[in-house]
View 1 (spheres, rainbow, N blue to C red):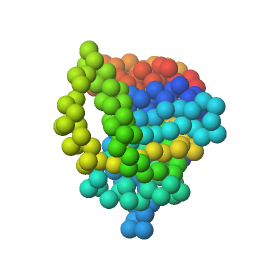
View 2: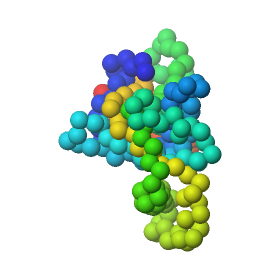
View 3: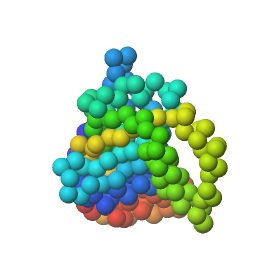
Length: 209
C-alpha cells in the first residue's frame, strides 16, 4: 500500500481501534486458480510480546472454496476499511485546492491456517457473537439453542492468521493547514453522515500526526 509519511499510522491503539470498530474485512488469498476474495467479519487480538503482530480468527461457509487455499505458508491480506468521506476543495480556507478523499484503512498480512476443529469453532463463534452483540445490544446476548448451533457449525470452517506485518494509512488532510483541517472537520460533522462524522473525529485525533 502506498503511504506518504504524513499519512502513516504506527500507533497500535489507533490501529486496534479501527480494526475493532470496523471488523467487517476483505480477506484476499492467492491460489492456483487465481486470487480469492471474501468479505466477512474477523476478530483481531494483538500479541504484545510476540514476534508476530497478532492473531486474526475467523470463519467462512464450508461451501466457499476460498478456504481450500489456506496452506499455512502463502501470505494472505486482510483489509479493514474504516470511515471515509469525499472532501470538496470548497471546504478549505486556503486555495488553490483539488477534490480528494479522506479515509482510514488497515492492512494485515500473514499465512492462514485452516482450523477444522469442532470445539475451537464453537468457542470462536461464541467469541464472535459476544463481541458484536455487546456493541449492538444493551444487554448480554441470549444463549443459543445447542441443537441449532450444532447444526450450523457443520456448515462453516474456521481459520487463523498469524499476522506478520501491519500497515495503516489514515489520510486525514495532514498535508493541509490547521485551519483547513478544522474547517473540513466542521463541515463533515454538519453533514449528518455517520462515516463523514467518523472521519471528522479521526481528523481531530490524528490530524496533526
